[in-house]
Length: 400
Image (cartoon, rainbow, N blue to C red):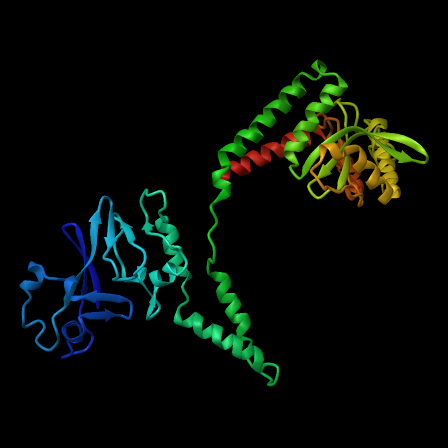
């Protein structure tokens, strides 16, 4: 049995033999000058520790078995306990923060597997566990390392899975141990990330809250913007909400039946694919009709006209193909990364226009039908959509 206890500023390692009448540790210390306990703890005569607790041991208690033997295991240095050199490893020093209670599982994995021998083979520098040292491994992360070591069951499963995979090629009814092994591994945490969502939570919250406040202020002062100013402001918001797009180009002309057509905005993503976007200043009377046509609300002229316009742009871009890619790259390359390529592959269209806050329930239902009808080609987004998306994003960030 192995135990750890604190005596003054030291950690004391105590071992009692499992074998009656066999004081093999003291024998090895006498004959070899050292003893190796559990195949991983290396102690020499100089490490033997005797305190009052051991001097007062009652002989009757250990009449049929050897006395426990204790060794100096770690010394206090500032807020850390430093493991005695060579007890675990030779080339690095190991420090445990003073708030950590020592346990055998921190050092011994499975039966005879040294945790720190494995770590030493991967990290060539002193190891600090817990505490505020700038190079310290957080204690929770260290516990994950301990859990990552394979136990006897995992080793057996691994071996059986390798063997069964071969045997199943020649015999029937051989169990699929590989599937069982993979299920076992899936339950184990193999790698712990840095919690990026928590790191950037404050930044993201400020980002989306600022965008929401900006958009709500713009919608409260629509008449303070002309059409160009409004488009530029909204486009900046779109690029923040859709970070896959790296650039937006205004008034880009494309070839259409031997004529030039001008796109309001051309979006380019990180892979060179292009999409197009139409941005309209909002009005309460630009989306759906108030009257019914055969018991349905239909898109108003501005919406249907914008949809038709975008569909034609997409049609012309797809026809332009490879020649168009070269032409666009010639015009835009000064504002794109070096060796970048433009790709015209089924571009998507975006329409940012209108309000739906004053639509009736029936109008909203028919408007949703229109949006879904074109969703494979064109995404129709109202300003109320943008506001709701922003609010939902902010709410989700707060819940992290």
